Length: 266
Image (cartoon, rainbow, N blue to C red; front, top):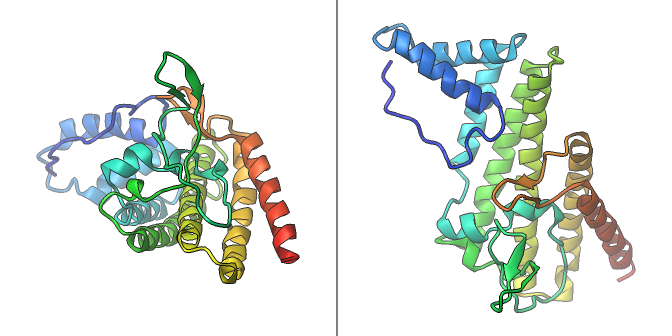
């Protein structure tokens, strides 16, 4: 089996996961089997799953990885979204209704910004999201995350079935991580659905807003136990701060609850 190389990002290896384990696993195994015609992709991945997780259904683990990979084909990648997208703090990003203000979204890897006179101020998260869409239209962006969330959820089901009788730390963390990724992606989707409404806001759109807000409420309620269980979720190693945490997600849940009570009266 031939391998062309390795593609990673600057913070690869900051925490030990199956990804960092896989790098060393592939490096060692391929150095011994590079010219072995029987060393196929499936055989290599099966060995990785069994070595890392121990007790598992390796075929289902591979199925989960393939679903996650397929889902990311729909990720609307662009440099503007990488630097200005709301994905890093989506779980605590307000899901407001009504007309939009003028403040644009700002750099998503910083918690604080310079005021221009040597002072540092708490970062204000903008609500104009057009620039961070990059080359995509808002409809294309929403469609991409809709497909991504749907397929990613299928991958979680595969992984849960593959590791259902494995109570080790590594198995639990991988499942929790996959679930948290889904909740973040779903929040991004809901935020942009509401943004589309707010660009041409009218009271007739309130019913549609309520449905999206209800979905976000359920999404956050499912994410909260994971945040309470593992405090590493939400930590951004470049900004060196928590972009979201259990406390701020609870605040957003309470805010959405108030929105729901208020809009029922409207």
